[in-house]
Amino acid sequence: MKRDILSSISLNDTELKIQNLLVNFCEHYNSNCEPNKELVLRITGGWVRDKLLGKESNDLDIAINHLSGEEFASQLHSYLDQFHPNLTLKAIHTIKKNPEKSKHLETCTTKLFGLDIDFVNLRSEEYTTDSRVPIIECGTAEEDALRRDATLNALFYNINQGVIEDFTGKGLDDLKNGILRTPLQPLQTFLDDPLRVLRLIRFASRFNFLVESETLKSMTNDEIKSTLIHKISRERIGVEVEKILTSNNPEYGLHLINYVGLTKSIFNAGPFSKVIDENNDKNTLDEMNACTQNLVSQLPIVLGLFPVFQSTIKESSFPRFQESFDAIFNDKQLKKLFWLCAILQPYKSLSVKSNAKRAMRTQVVEIILKEGLRFGKHEFDPVSTIVRESQLSHEILDRCFKDPDHLKRSELGLYIKQFDKYSALNIVFNCFNDIVQQIHLEAPSDLPSPVPVNSLDLDLSVITKSIQSYECLLTSVINQKLTEVHTIRPLIDGKTLSKELSMKPGPWMGKINSEILVWQLDNPSGTQEECLNYVREILPNYI
Image (tube, rainbow, N blue to C red):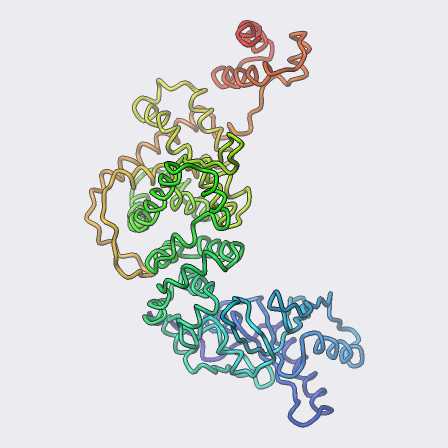
């Protein structure tokens, strides 16, 4: 997939100031240094790639050939004090050498002309058989380029000379052709650090690039799958998954993940799997394994149907549903939550024990997000609720679709309220999930393409009918003024309730508060006094 790239890099005003200053510093330093120790500075990584694609980038990493980042920053600071006292390096922060965290060589982070800059040595990497953490040493520019995850990320911009350097010999062509390949032999590259598989998939979904055939084949290696599960930290995996799900084309990234067989390696409970195995009976574990198999088999169907779902929404006249859909997919966080719901839906309301001595159970969806991907409450709370209730609360939806006039305002309100501010996300996901469950397809095995090809022979009336049903639901929510129902609190607070009823707080209060909410929803114009009268009527049932 060819694309236009620039033949040279054009610096903006700030970048030009930085280049001029650093070139002047290098000339000053080199005039006093030993032979063969002259400084050459190179901008590395994503900045070069993005500039050639015509995109601005603030990700400025500058590699140094003969000094550590800290040594360079110190020398530059002295130079500025002497020759440019009006300029200073703001907030110099040095990341010290730390072998356990791969920080063998000091990186210095600072700010120059308002831009954050990282100064770091050119590096070489060597992996041992018993560790995913490389031994990092000072290296040459070529060694630094070859250690990178993709040829198009191994392009350098030589600041001293103002030229692009392609030490792999393939980076510029691959960028022009939209091809992702590793600088070195792909299988060994991935075995050294399997997270590189996810990084390449992330770049594919971000830029709509193709993965080179040998590179794609190497991603399917069984040892890579095992290492992702057992040796790569779940935080690192979660970071890459988040970037894929918030990219320009998350469907393509998920297609690639499933195509190379990494779905189960990524979407699992991580180290917490051992706790689940130790505290649950065989039936529960068998059910969980069956859900996992369903996840793998259903995901390509989900990904195949989504473009049809999306195009049907755009071509149909369902304004409220389209507005909700657009709001979700124009927001990175909501888009991520939608895809997490779609991926993990096969687990539905399944829950497991994490302690054999306690009856409390936790949803598998929550565990996968919390322990397996290290996502936070803003992810696992809404996703686990939406996925769970897509099974447990669907009866309310069915009644609403059948005859919305016979559904009490309180029933619809309480259904919507449980999703907090994510009610629109819940509605759009449920609509899509209904379609997935109604349309029976064989999982496509085609090579993933960044541009979806709609070759499915589908009855679009099923999709249109489902969207129409949820359009009616949204209309009911709006007409009954329930869009902000998640903000409603009981009309009478606990203190007032105790005083008016001359009763001390107790278990009765929580139950009465629930009844108050129902009454409020069914009597939106009701007063506090009317509500109190109602409470007095029902109070004997709760004491």
